[in-house]
Image (tube, rainbow, N blue to C red; front, side, top):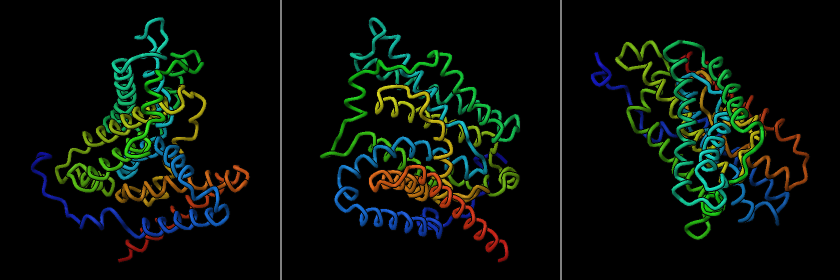
Length: 341
């Protein structure tokens, strides 16, 4: 039986696939956190400026986390996304630099910016393809594969740049994408993240690709016997995750105006934490894009709220860790309850 001839998998209602008990309770946690900081600092936290900066700062992490959602639903993991982001930003910036007169991309035009974007996407896709081939075809555990890619991507970025951040980023890129707004003040970076999120939700919750992702995470062998091309699908999932990391690298380049090589050491953990806090099971087979969006914003609200409220930022990882452990504990309770039925 070929993949196209596979018997249709059971479908749940769209709303049931998008939401669930974990999504609802974590959404309440986010609302409570936002309300608490608004009460503590009513004149500085619940403002348009704070909300706008919160959305911008979360955009890059959200793009990373959408790809991570698919990977974790397949019962995999990707520890390399933060370093792939750096590598992709380096490739994009170096391409724009090399193509610019005098190797100064500051005044480069849109054609060179487009080449830089393509380079970042290709750079991210390369690592995604490597991860996917090693996980799906070579059967190496994803934890080991992506941990290796973590070091290799960072090392490659440092070799290309000599360990020095590239700062000659086109002004057009920074002004239009990094700080540009549309529709009366909506940051373009936020709009890009929203488009990626909506596309990810559509792909996961309404298409055959999404159903196969859930099926593989629930039971890869059963999915294979049902006619699903598990190997091919896993390669595509990791490839997509790498491509999104490449896009995130270009967004990061546009916002900061530099490759920020030393600034993404915890991006992979932040993305995993956001996805798991949002209700996606580390055991695979369960999760939603909506849950990921909520989960990603919880660390962001905590970080922003702690800064505005004057709480030492060292408390932020402690608070996120507590929420993360609580999310995994809740997932285990839910799984044991389901298995008893």
